[in-house]
Amino acid sequence: MATRKPLISGNWKMNHTHLDAIAVVQKLAYSLSPADYERAEVSVHPSFTSLRSVQTLLDADEVPIALGAQNVYPAPSGAFTGEVSPVMLAKLNVRYVIVGHSERRQLLGESDEMVNRKLVAVLEHQMVPILCVGETLEEREAGTTQDKVLGQLEAAFQGVDAAAAAKVVIAYEPIWAIGTGRTASPEDAQAVCASVRSWVAKAYGAEVASTTRAQYGGSVTPDNVAELMAQPDIDGALVGGASLDAERFARIARLGTGPA
Image (tube, rainbow, N blue to C red; front, side):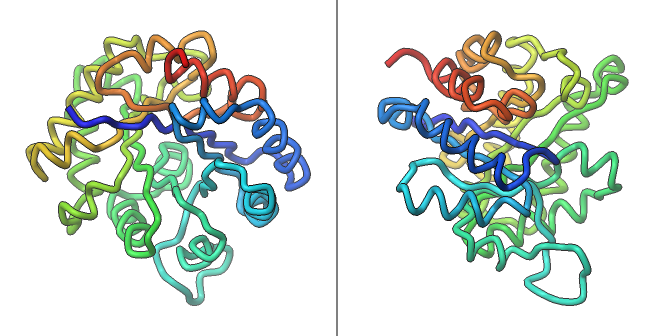
């Protein structure tokens, strides 16, 4: 099996001013050791208004934390008031871009087609998409989790070849667990992530599937991260609320990657 370095990502959503963001990243950098970075890659995803401030800090202090964005518009430029293009993000040294988060799908009406366009645009501008997939509570109770997740994958990867697909990080985020305090059991999360990897293998081959990183997201905390990350097909975490506090997020980064 290929070695997949875990990716622990903090999605700050609509939280933290640029001054707050600087303080959190400074504290996070102080809390993590070189050994922590050896075991896992860490990314932070501040709001658009904080990206430049965080980028300046990371670059100036040579902090080995990857800069991420929470969203992108698929066009390189144009009359799209209020949107941010992949060109703008790439110029800020953004490495990871979240696409298809359930909050954007549900609250802002983002379609599967738009998610596909965003994923393709991120790849075209040499950044890495973190593609979010997941089911509602009603879908889980109806036994249609696999259908929902695999359908989202099928739609998101339209027109993406194997070389590009190999770069995509896939985050399984059950919608019913996001911000609710409820977490999928490690076994349930593993089952879905294993299905995700099987889908990648069928679509792009075993080699791509062996290197694809599958994150779990949904009320990840220092108390549950180690058990989740111990599963063979879970290669990191997409962390929401717990990533807003540098000490908690640093604990997640350490506990989610095993002992030194």
